[in-house]
Image 1: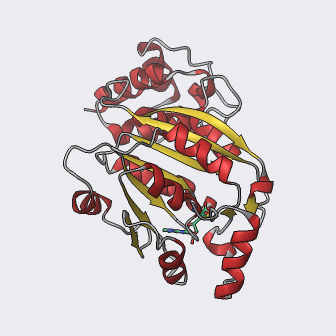
Image 2 (image 1 turned 30 degrees about the vertical axis):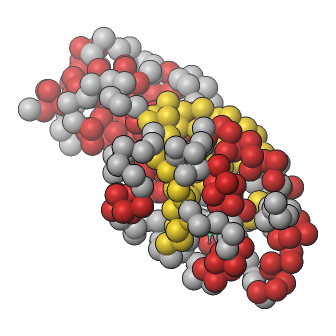
Length: 291
Ligand code: SAM
């Protein structure tokens, strides 16, 4: 096999040949370490049955590994300048489709139906552009796509927040939002030195296994997520305080304290101490009261 794309020398060679200049605004930090990519493929559980979706193929470093290990690869790249480069770097593979679209605008469901076999397991694998990590992941989760897992390299601190447990310093509304849809784990920490150019932040690989059913039953998902967010509005404040502020137009402080008690939760606790089950109980109690 030819030299892999993800090495410093090969990456420099491609850059020079095409006169490519990185766009910081698109989060272009390319991977130049083949071993890291192989580890990502391993954690993602990619095999010859898998249909793989990549977001932001760049010059094809990860795409190449996906082409080798998966059945079929569909990659969404926003930067038109990369399309001819990818055509060249991936010319040896006949199982890759490059779609020149912004992932936030793309009809992913349609592309899945078009490119993958019926019933084939579909997994998302990406070294994400860090400036839109959360919008991308929330889009993937909220669209309820027929995918089984998402394995992404993202900013370390964001990965920790998404996978955090109650009472840890990273726990917040983002942890609840992600864990409502998935089982979330940080599987690797990655140093800055494996990117070109090097980013300013440390990175981690987050592995999300999609749930078939939410882990808690909520009466209304939007209401639940709103209440969770309100509970963390001011981290150092108690539930009594944060919720009194959130519901200031609807309920008195007394009524709020009463409702929290009714949900069997201490109003003097902070949001950061509550489990997802407790948040569900709290949201359902408030929701029913409002009916
Ligand atoms: N996968 C390559 C690698 O690992 O070397 C490149 C990863 S780089 C961190 C992120 C890639 O996402 C860039 O190629 C960038 O152009 C692309 N990108 C940025 N915003 C995007 C968007 N909204 N939709 C699709 N691709 C995007």
